[in-house]
Image (cartoon, rainbow, N blue to C red; front, top):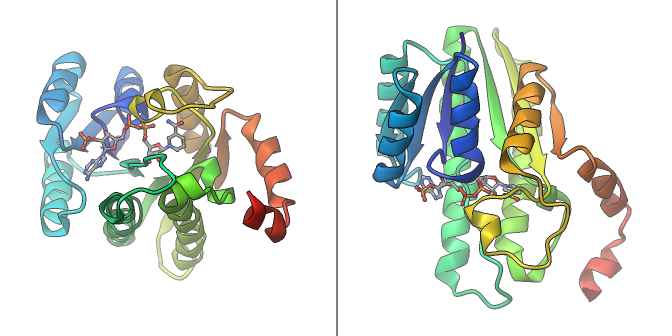
Length: 239
Ligand SMILES: NC(=O)c1ccc[n+]([C@@H]2O[C@H](COP(=O)([O-])OP(=O)(O)OC[C@H]3O[C@@H](n4cnc5c(N)ncnc54)[C@H](OP(=O)(O)O)[C@@H]3O)[C@@H](O)[C@H]2O)c1
């Protein structure tokens, strides 16, 4: 039985991760801002779920809540940094980009440091970061979002290197979904190959179990990533 802490568990991918991990008999510690969603999830999962409302951008509180949930759960083997926001608008107000950067970049980095320190002391563990195919893109209507996912994937490469310099068995898994049904994509337009949440999360859990370094969800998005990597800079500048 693994002990898994999941951020952004109140909806979409995070909620489905919680349900599927619990169905496999693992303990799950779940955070998100919407307390009523956490309470409903706890009622659905039962004793294997440990919940606490949290805004991940409140770093002092996040530190306290992560540790509190780990103590309640009796340890932690995997920390899934899934909480994320993104809006698609060509001219978003600054506060929208600021919020994206605070959640997807700064709170992600804070969570990664928390997990790394915890797993270093423990001697083992796995950090999972919810990046995106957007880690390969540059899109004007989602500039902060695509840039934030570049950060996440690149940051995880750095943490994989850091892990070699500590006396601990730490694995880093970078998950890069294409489109998956969730609250975030419910607002989106011009989407294709949108995966059902349960199918996408099954593939994520398998990749985490296999300690994959990088995985595209669903698998066909790997081909898109390979193609996108060949797009020269002048093309991005003209889009
Ligand atoms: N769906 C896709 O197609 C897709 C593709 C690529 C990557 N992703 C990534 O997958 C992750 C999950 O997104 P989703 O698609 O499942 O969307 P979602 O249904 O909107 O879920 C986002 C989650 O993040 C949480 N969150 C947002 N701001 C937060 C904050 N300040 N503090 C704590 N939690 C916060 C939300 O909880 P509260 O609102 O309750 O706080 C919610 O649980 C994101 O990182 C997203 O970028 C999704």
